[in-house]
Amino acid sequence: MATIIDGKLISQQIQEELTIEVNAIKANGSKLPHLAAVLVGNDGASETYVGAKVKACEKVGFKSTMVRLAADTTEKELLFIIEGLNNDPDIDGYIVQLPLPKHIDEQKIMMAIAPEKDVDGFHPQNVGRMALNLPTYLPATPFGIMQLLERYKIDTVGKYCVVIGRSHIVGSPMSILMARNTNPGNCTVTMCHSKTADLKAFTLKADIIIVALGKPEFLTADMVKDGVVVIDVGITRVASTQTKSGFKLLGDVKYDEVAAKSSFITPVPGGVGPMTIASLLVNTLKSSRKEVYK
Ligand code: NAD
Image 1 (tube, rainbow, N blue to C red):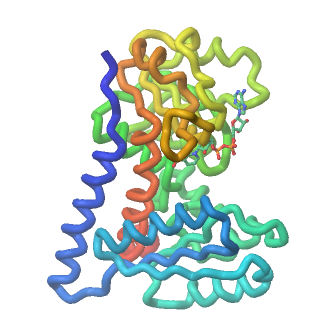
Image 2: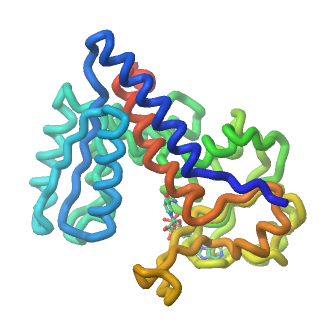
Image 3: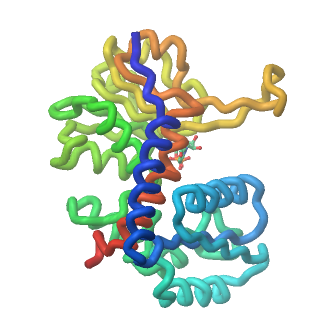
């Protein structure tokens, strides 16, 4: 019987821990951690994500600022706003919600964010620090997964870990983190992607599989061995006649049949998803305490 990794519960625990920290900050009259979020345009999904991040800040007692910009904001105007956030001493960290409108070069924007305020951990300087195991802001989703492995005391040392997907926000950082000389970590890692030949040959040997490719129910029971640890990052909205909303969320794992062979597994929803916001808040607290860039 698999242990179901409850990301909702762990995320709540982390947010409760943060509230205690904020109360201590308030009690000694220090400046509250302050996160800003920049949203360009009015993409529905992005509005929901940013709204949830701002709400979570308020819940734990952080200050938050929402910077809403019109869809036709120019790259130059956005760079000007970013310079303002970089130079504002009250803002500890900020995020620029992706995707940006097509006329704005995302890479250029990411590079303009001051690394010490890059609480999403996407700036190349922070990615490099992660690879070198130096203090940094870990990107939110991989950081959340590391927290789940740690808090469920999942033994990773010497294990064989297969990561499916090589995106810059999940697959690639996950493969680096699992291979580092840290705990969790110390795995032997293979990163698989769309051009991998015979993926099943790798997954069948894996002790830990982290699946982040965005293809619903892709990982099936015949691809895994008994006792495997499965972390499902995928979230895809599919039409459903069984829900009021008319859709449901599916992960990248065929849950019931894979769970039957697993020792630990994350559900979708309620697994990795809720951890992302908690990680962002932890990064913001770290920034306000100058724990990464002293
Ligand atoms: P992406 O779309 O940027 O990349 C997908 C990756 O999957 C690519 O690297 C590609 O090489 C690989 N891939 C595609 N088909 C494959 C195949 N047949 N075999 C092996 N590899 C294959 O992905 P992403 O942005 O990392 O997102 C992946 C999923 O995770 C999506 O469903 C996304 O919604 C979800 N996601 C969830 C969270 C969260 O907070 N839970 C955060 C980020 C992404």
